[in-house]
Structure formats: structure tokens, C-alpha cells
Image (tube, rainbow, N blue to C red):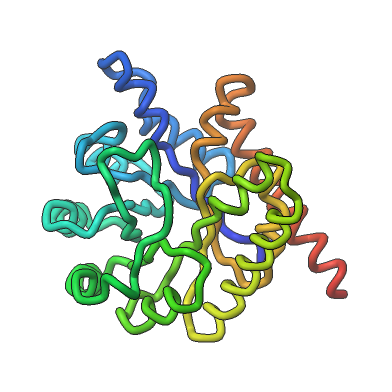
Length: 254
């Protein structure tokens, strides 16, 4: 459907299950191929410093075996920059990373970390890798992305999803408005805007309906739902809900 955000499927937690026992199964690359066939427009994988889920071998295989774009999530470190430059993924999203966290807990401080981040953004751009920064829905961070020369931001949807999970509809509406406002502002300063982190079937429609959002990145929920119905069905359902949301928005606009 024209104007519908792209769906990026994060396959990190297939690797989490594999690594819990060791060996080859379940195979995250197989999951990526299934997601692609079910309607994913891209695959996202986070190569962490501690290799707790995705490994270097996974990135090498994803680079050669999938036909949709690969979005490699990385910390701003020399090691990760070298890996990105070696594999040349379609895109690289710079994310904050703490060894003790279970998952990414918040957005990158692009404003406070300008001097550290600038060289990484430039090196990735020089290699024709599309650079995005994972940030909070805050105009200060979006302005910092522009100053850094990053053409894309991914807005952290964690607070929005957490509000829904605790049935706090006041906070849910407030966080949705923050994402809507940040998307509009990002677009106004020339950024391509993506949104991700924590989205599921019950929270995706309001996000997919935001005018100007180019891509949603969704992983943990899809992998969890796949235990019950299979990954192909989970991805196809998410794709359908996104299309419905944008279709409803088009109908209202008409």
C-alpha cells in the first residue's frame, strides 16, 4: 500500500534461544529468510560487544543470504565500525549499549556525544552505508542528528509501549503525541524517521498511522508470538495491521 511504513524485522532473539543451549538451532538466518517471504522489507540485527545473541558468523551469513536490506545495529566503537565497514550492510543504526542491560534501555545521547559520534557517522557515510541514530523523541536529539550528518533517526518507542503495558492510557496518549510531534519535527529538518522498540500487535497501529514515518523495526514481540503461531504468520499479521492503519489514515484524510 502506498505510503505504508516499511517493516524491519529484528531476528536477535532467535539467536538468544539458540545461544541458550549452543549449537546451530534455531537459526536466525532461516528466520530472516522466512520473515522476508512473509512481508518484511528488511532485516535488523544487533551485534553486541558481548555477542549475547547475534554473532559475527550470523552477520556474515545475513550479508550473503538475504535479499532484502540488512540494518546492522552497532555501538559507536572501533570494533563495530570495522565490522560494519567489512560487511557493508545497507544501513547501520548506532545505538547505546551497556553490558548489564537486558535490552537497549533508551535512546542515544546524540547531543551530548557529538564529538565521539561524529567520526563514526562520517566513516559509515563515506562507505555508502545509510546511517541512523537511535534516539529519544526529542527535538534536541533530532537537531544533533542533523549536525552530525546522520540522514535517519529511529525514535525510541519504549515509553509508549511501557505505558500501554501498565494500562496507563494518559501516559500512552502523551507518549504517542511525543512520537507524532518528533516525527513531524524530524521531517521538517530533513530527517527520515523510523520508530522501534517494544511494538506489538496492540500498539503498532497508532504508530504506523503517523504521517511521515518511513519504517518500523520490530523484533522481540514477533519472535515471541512465533512460538505459538509461527514466524511467517506473525510477520504477515504485523504487515497487515500496518497496512490497515495507514489505509484508515488515508481514508480520514480523503
